Image (tube, rainbow, N blue to C red; front, side, top):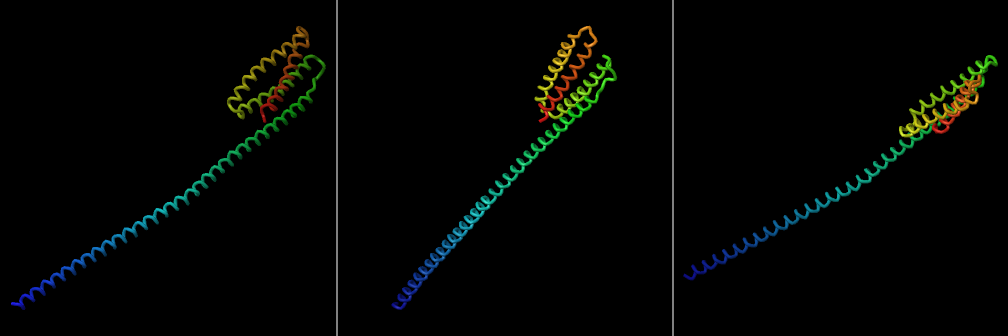
Length: 210
């Protein structure tokens, strides 16, 4: 009977020891699992931080490149505008030089005009030819300005030109009336037309071709 009790006590102690061992194993297993999860979470967090840092560095790298590209594009645009302005200025300067030369050519042509005789008719024809030379040059100059000037400036010039035509005709008429009824009346009229038209050619070239 005593041996049976000892045996039962031994079994009980063994069972308790076994339970204790299992419990500790479970604890160790749980601890290891928790520690493993924490390590994984930490590693994942570090990886995400590195990725964010890489993205930030990439963004910082791309921004200066974009800014440099924008600055380069702006510089190219400014250069194009400057070159365009320079080309326009050069063309205008060349155009003015060309018409200054045309004025000199017209003066030379007028200087070669000679009346065939001393009659009033011959003198009138010479003055009329002189006027035509300057009138043709004036019309040519005006047409060129219509193509070259900005619309608003051209509109102002049209108004001034209409006023000038009235002034020219009135001035010629007023001058000729001093010889009203005489042989010099028509001669004076055409002579004033030629003089004023020459002056107007010079005004347009000097004042609007710059």
